[in-house]
Length: 331
Length: 260
Image 1 (cartoon, rainbow over the protein chains, first blue to last red):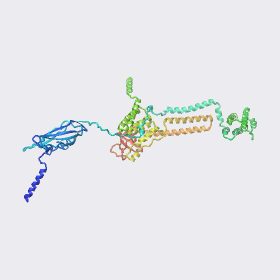
Image 2: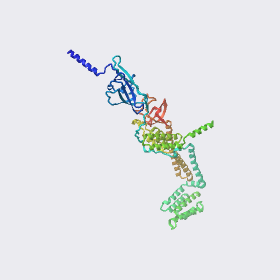
Image 3: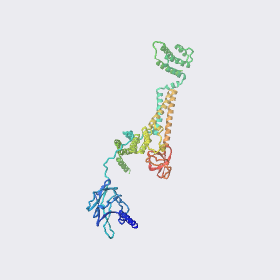
Image 4: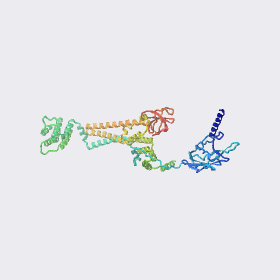
């Protein structure tokens, strides 16, 4: 029983040892290549690559006795002495599968498609390639270096695909502007103090000139204006001006004239006819021709009321107003 | 010495681009931008060039409402809303009565994107008001002149006719003149108070703080959006103290503001 269990432990240990790589194998950069003199070499299909382009890099292993056993180096996992990833930091790496390796092949190649990440790449990094020489004495593992060729990374080529155009969205009225010479005008008008004084004094001057001209044209105008202040005259004048709106304008004019005369002169009560008025006024200090004129006006008013041929009420009103103004001056 | 100065001045004048050429270039760029409006990035480039030419004319002293409106539209279509508002405010400073500028300013103000309603209430300015916004100075001059002249002519006529109606007419004209003058005086006082504190536009989103430094807390939740109008109260250490439309006071970095 004890012998059986010991054999089982040995068998188990042997199987585990067979599954795991030998602990004396190098951890880094060993890809199962064996041979007395193994060499590795990088080659590229182009040495100038645009930033948005890609190149094919081929790693060729020669001199190995077991080309079919060699493991493809995982460039993305390659770490240099400083712990950095020289390939992954510089390129996006994509494995390109190759044809099956013949049994009698003298070399094996691995192809990678590399896309540069930036323009500061001067060369493809070197790859340390460890192989087993099979020596029984001393260190059987030797290292060969696949030197990376120089590279030039250029600016990205212009994109051939036209970007989708987006329209400028804005209210329609914004796309219309004013044009013309008015755009080259200076500031809008703003009155200066001098212009304000000109306005103030100019208006006063215009009014003064108008009044002076009026005085010149109508020398008696001022006195007549003062006379118009007479209440009796103002009432009579207003009545004459309203006469046109009455049913009997001539009677209204005659009444206005009689009312004025009665308020200004001591006419006896019941004095209405032209003859009675003429007789009554002769006692007052009014010139005879003025008395005759007022009597004539009253007669014409009567004629306008009752006769076949009558005067125009408008001309009667104008004549009555003039007559009363004259009477106001002489009374 | 004088001759040299004159020579330099002549050389400078000869190098200066004629005003009409600048105007034509501005209008041409604007037309190109309008034609390219289906491609926003290309159109904005044209509008920016047009706005630059219009700015040049404005700086040369051509301050009229039409030019201010064109400047504003070019800036706005170029994507520069603060500059558009600044152009309108500059135009309204010389032509406050211009209705087109007022409408355009309200339109631009409506385009300001406030992050929240609180900031909108604090920042949204009131519409321009006052008699100066409804009546041009030339109109006021003519209207006042007409009333003043009418009053004096009524007095002259009163002296001629002695009719009290002319005195009443003169009094009415005087009262109207006094009322108009009072409105303009009030408007002038308000404008003078407003002009004591210069206006500035927020050019890029920034935080309104209670003090002049980033260590001070925010005055409001949310950032002041570009296009907000504020009155400048003072400067200190690269920061500007501003007053918003509703009266809130705070500090913003100087680089965030576009002075008018």
